[in-house]
Structures are given as C-alpha cells and as structure tokens.
Image (cartoon, rainbow, N blue to C red):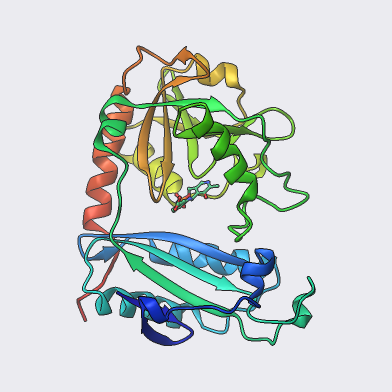
Length: 293
Ligand code: PXG
C-alpha cells in the first residue's frame, strides 16, 4: 500500500511522522474522510473546501493549492489501483519544539493521504436499523472549538462514542449546551415527521456534512420532501416517523430506537430506504473520475 506523505508516495511501513509533530502532540491539525465509488471521488471539491476552511479557522496555511491537493488524492488512488476507497487526508501543524504555540513549529505542515479499502458497517445495520443512546457528554460549544472545524481534536466525540459502545449500541446522539440535538459522534442526524425532513442547523453544533448536504438535495429533488434545518429536542426524535444518520463512512443508516423508545414502527422508514437508494445511485454515477484524462 502506498501512502502520500509530504509530496512523496511511500510504502505503508515507511509512512512515519515524528513524535515532535504537533498533530500528535496537541491534535493541532485538520482532516477529511472522503470516499471513492466506482472509480469516482465523491464530492471531492466540497471536501477540499471544508478542509481549507477548517485550516483557515485554525490559521494553518496548507502549502498546496486545492488543485494540487486534488491531484495528490487522485495520484494516491491510482498508485494503489483503487476504484472504491476510503480516503483519509490529514494536514498537521508539522514538527516543532515542545509547547503549544504553533510558532514553535518549523513552518512546514505535515500532509498525508491514506487510501484504503472500505470496511462497511454490517449490512444488517442498513436493513434492520440502529439503536442509539443519548450521550451525557455535550457537543463542544461553537464559542470554544467550533464543531464546524474538522480538527484532529476528536476527544469530545470519542468520549461520547465510548458511552454508546458501553451501552451496547454503535452511535450516540450528542446534544448541544442548550439541550437541543446537535449530531452524532461521526454522523449528522435527520428526522422525518409528516413528510418534512429536519436536521439541526450547523450553528447548533453540527459539522457541515457533505453527505447531509447531498441527502437534503435528493430529498428535495427526488423524494419531493420539504426540507428544514431547524432545532429539535429528544422528544422530536422519539416521536418522529423516521430517523436516520448520514456520514461519509456510514452513508445513510436508519435509526429504529433511541434511549429505549421505538421510532415509528421500529423498522427502517420508507422515505429513508428511498433516500438510501437515491444516494447509492448518486455516489456511483457522479464525482471526479480517477482514471480518465
Ligand atoms: N459529524 C461529525 C462529527 C463527523 O465527524 C459527520 C458529521 C458527517 O460528515 P460527512 O461530511 O462525512 O457527511 C462527520 C464525518 C470515521 C469517519 O472514520 C467519520 C466521518 C467521516 C468519515 C469517516 O469514523 N465523520
């Protein structure tokens, strides 16, 4: 397996970063999780826009243009002869002396790109739906580390994820500091009530999901659903007709139970299943081609 590391393609065993890298020492950096389907990278420019926006928010200047970064992603996929892949793109503050101050770094961010096979969730999650719990850990407030920044600091989400797995479920709902539903640990959340699709606005403490945006477009254009970005509480999840999660890794996953309450009739909802079909079609047919040109 070839890894892109600071401009070179190196073997997996040689893809090493220093213990003085501030990405490792302080979680000082940003990342993206991207997927390729059927020889095409899904929404690559949206992922790169989010990466550069996150980097800008933490005042990290990425030493590659978006165009060169796009070429690096394609080059890595080609080197590994992949058509379907999970792509992890990471930019850290780079190596430096000990101490928080990024000025202690030597001005050369570390960039690496891993392209690997995709390990999908078991198919039964998609056909039978997931159970969730609500984490007691709140999503970090936008006034501190804004959840819109996809930084290497994922401990807020990891702690909530551990609450889920300790409770025997794969995901947890995270509330914001005001008690409204924000998102899950690695996915955005949607509910459907009376043919209206609702997801929390990103200012309520959610990442601006690429999958979420695609799903809202499909819901409007293909499923003719009214789509709203609005605040809601756990009561609205418990009493929804349907509920599902979206994320690059998860795609669209139906939710059938939350905190012991059955949602709808306890089976993946009709609209959710329709959106899963539409999304799979969109992902298969659109995106930046890896092998053409
Ligand atoms: N919220 C959070 C906190 C996330 O980390 C999403 C929502 C969904 O966003 P996208 O753009 O992917 O639709 C994410 C993204 C992983 C993994 O390895 C996690 C994500 C993406 C890719 C891989 O668990 N989370």
